[in-house]
Structure formats: C-alpha cells, structure tokens
Image 1 (cartoon, one colour):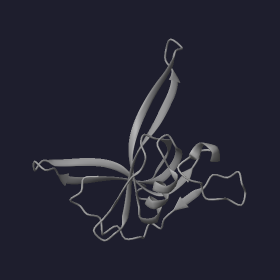
Image 2 (image 1 turned 90 degrees about the vertical axis):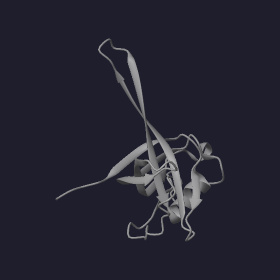
Image 3 (image 1 turned 30 degrees about the horizontal axis):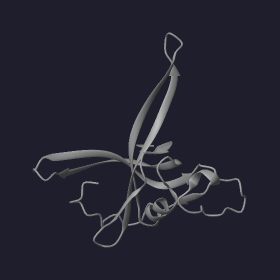
Image 4 (image 1 turned 120 degrees about the horizontal axis):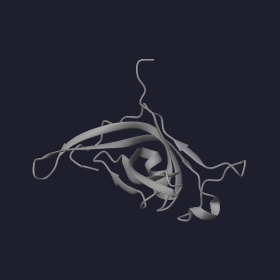
Length: 147
C-alpha cells in the first residue's frame, strides 16, 4: 500500500450544522466536532484535553446532517483529511485542514436526538447510518467561499 488518508472521529457537535448551497445547488454542511481525551497525570489527577475538528459533508449527507443533528449530538464521521487554500478579503493566503466525511453515524439514543425524528431502523437498537459515494462530483464547490 503506497498511502492511506482515512479519519474516524467520534465526538459531539459544538453547534448545529451550518448548511449552505453552491451555485450549482449542491448542499455542503460544515460542523465543528469535539473529541475529548481523558487521562491521569503523574500525580494521579484526572486530566481532560479537548480537540476541535472541522468536518465537511456534501450533497444528501449534508441535508441529512442538517435534519437530524444538533449541537451536542454524539456522532461518528469517517472520511479523509484535506487541506484547502484560499485568499481572504485582504488578499492573504489562508489554509484550513478539515475532515471531508463520506460516512456518518448518529450515536445518540433516540430520546437524545431532538430536532426531528431519526430514521427508523428495523433492528430498533442500532444507530442510524448515512453515507455517500466517494465518486460523487465535488467539482461544483465554490472556491471563493472560505467555509
């Protein structure tokens, strides 16, 4: 195997998904996901470190996130890391690294989700899943928007 770019994150949303539409009417959702590492330091005291991750999803998966996720939702995302470059309004080059997710799984229990009812599963106890085909076209992204 020559290389691998795969990210799996389980965390809580810091805000409701921010969904926008490109000029070609493709939905794109941006989310901030917190992951927390808990450990004991040398003195045996419990420590916590929270990392924030930018997650971007496209098309139907973006609409599903908007419909079913809210601030505080526990969610699993799978995708790849991608760094984008753009110019801000002052002409300065800016960079951002984000998770471009192609798979999402809601991990909250049904009573914790709010914001509408979750898709029903035949098993009743399995979390709801959603994913998109990686081959979907991302060429219609408006590169002038730094989100």
